[in-house]
Amino acid sequence: MVLFIIGLIVTSLVVLAIESFLTPSNGKYPEHPGGQGENTSSAPCWQNEDYIVKQHCAPCSEFEKVSRHLPACVLTGFKEMVSCKVSGEVYRSCDKVLWLEERNFFIFESCMTCFSIIGAMIVSFRQKQLDQRMMMRIQQQISAGV
Image 1 (cartoon, rainbow, N blue to C red):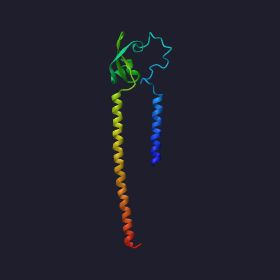
Image 2 (cartoon, rainbow, N blue to C red):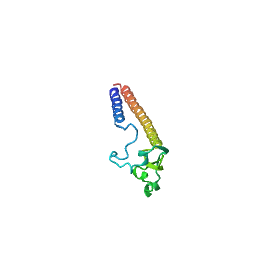
Image 3 (cartoon, helix red, strand yellow):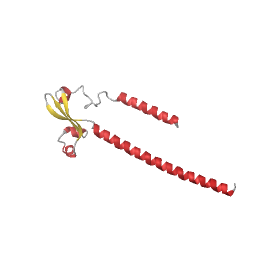
Image 4 (cartoon, rainbow, N blue to C red):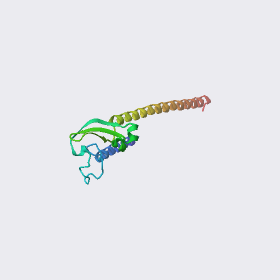
């Protein structure tokens, strides 16, 4: 049992190391796979100019997704407002919302904690039942004189 747990820990560490090695260092995935061959005049302003993030990544509303008014909402369903020095304020698509990911993680962890507590209670209840049955059999054997 202990060797199995150690094996799980080592496997988890190896997976985390490989994942951190394969993840891009800047935390963002490239927006367009063939970036070198693109014409810089048609590239978005945040690739050519200095920019400041005005609003962090947030989920798009259902109306924005359906109406396709913001092209940034069509790709991933999340938008981020950036202010380029020359071009002004524009929306760009972003991969994920940090607070939403954290909320989902904590919901998942809470559910798993509840399930593990319920499982432990069921196991202890069943163990008490089995112990009572064993004690009854032992008492029956002692009373029968065997």
